[in-house]
Length: 395
Image (tube, rainbow, N blue to C red; front, side, top):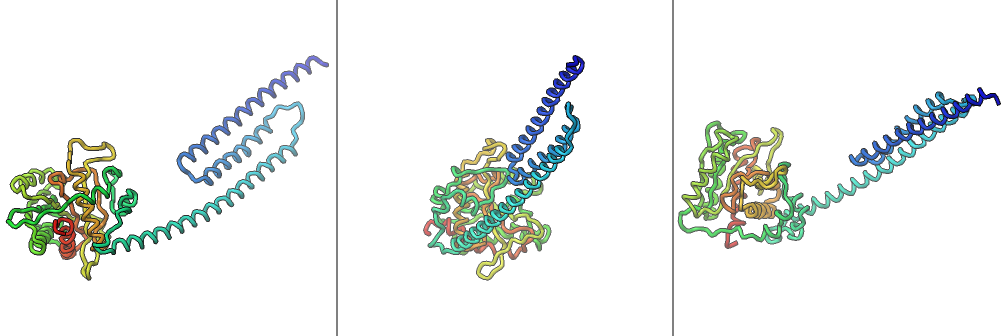
């Protein structure tokens, strides 16, 4: 054999081996990228069909881009078989089209399954709505089943709105514990006050309030509630009409020493109600009809002295958080039993909101700026009845 030709063949074989190794490494690297990408899609909870489709498209792209290049750049001792190259490319295209067809079938099946699940969920929700309506329409004697309220998921979904700033779990929100706490008080025969009503945000008005006239703001609504509690239910009520929100952001800090002084002067006060008016979108109307009367909806509010980011806030201690939660939940249950749709869900938020002065402290939102003053006034009759249902020790 000609030594020159033998030498050339040896060099060619070495180059072929080297090139094949290079090609193999390239294909391996590409496939690794594909699997990593698929893994990321899975971990980020992309749909399975979407993950498969992206992976297959990437494979096809590699087949279409890398394989032809490998054929064109191959160093072989024999001439290139163009027919074989074409057949491989055609097969790759057919495989890709087959994959897409199979994927389409899978997506259709998943879509049908998802539609069926949504239908079942809608039916279940409709059933749950009927069940809730039946529960809410039950009289005071019937009550809401305690076993349902003891289900934390049911309780949190149906009775509470938890602000994103805070968290709560079943150890703090246990219906069995909260509903068995005694929140009643004895009605006093003397004139010493036992209920305090005040307003951290006294300037909060309604759609037809008169600027500068507190009697047309939430303060006027508070006076109406105080009168009903006195005249109809026999409670001794002190209504503080102080204005603490000239600087709204500082209102709770400004109000705190005044409320502490009132409680110090009147140690007989057992119940503290901070009456507010909520703020909502201008297109929202918080209106309900009770016994043929249009009125503003009411919402009970609790501060938990706990944020999602910080956990328990040590500099805002409240030894009465459980008592506060018990009071608001008992009010909410009574409202659901007597006046369905009168109350919104109890709102839980992260800070303290001066609810640490007494065990039976609650913040109440009466309607919003889109309600009329009369709608807010009308809501005080059922609110007073709900308060009496929970507070009356003879009930």
